[in-house]
Length: 305
Image (cartoon, rainbow, N blue to C red; front, side, top):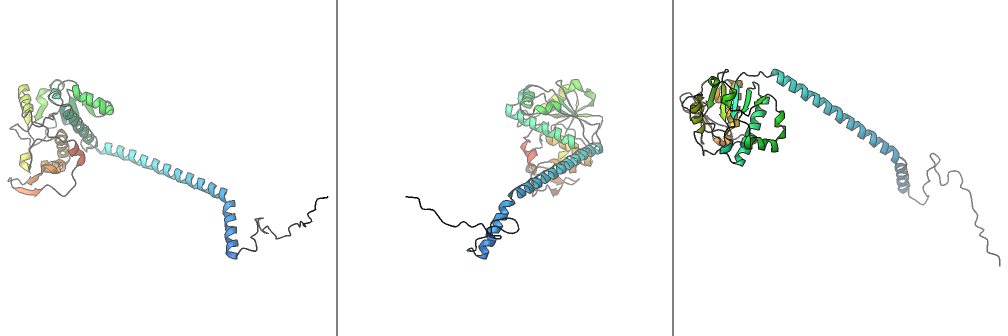
């Protein structure tokens, strides 16, 4: 028996049926509501413009990247110019500051590491100072050098510093030396720019009290203490960290005032109170300001003594 023939009539689509007259998109089915038809056409257009949107996103991303690069280059140039201006505007001092590192064998490893941090602070402050001093590190070696080699390899590239393995008395003329020690009966009133002031690089928690004063006397060199008691009353001992003494000297060179120098540098925890010329309390060291965390971090009580 012959197979039944499907006589379903196939009719070609008439103009306007199934395709839109404008762009060939499938026309919405008449069974859809107007809202649904509008939504369908919107979805079709969204799909068709996918590549165009992708290209626009790439262009915007590229534009933003170029803007960022341009801004970074401008900021870098500004920073370099500012640094150049800063270095030009600073006026180096002929004053010499020496950190005596000859006490290496008297310190524990953890104390040597604290001294290392204090020296780092001295170097950084001198680099940004308005009147940078001639900075010396003497008797460099032992545990200190090992700590610096391990934790701060860039120290070998430090600028504007003289690092010597020799003792300071072999590097500088003895008649130029003044050891800064809190045990000295002499009080420093002014700075002599022809002198080299020595700071004892010793973190000992007062286990070797007076050692730097004794060393100065043995060598027959001048010694003096900062005029701390004249201008400041403190709740704690007068012994300061290496970087504090160094920064006070830098601050005095800038401000020409011991009291301003002390209150610029002394950490809040020292409880410093200003004294007027008659020795009476004048004003309290600001206790509502934030402490200098960088300084506190590296400021163990050292005998600068």
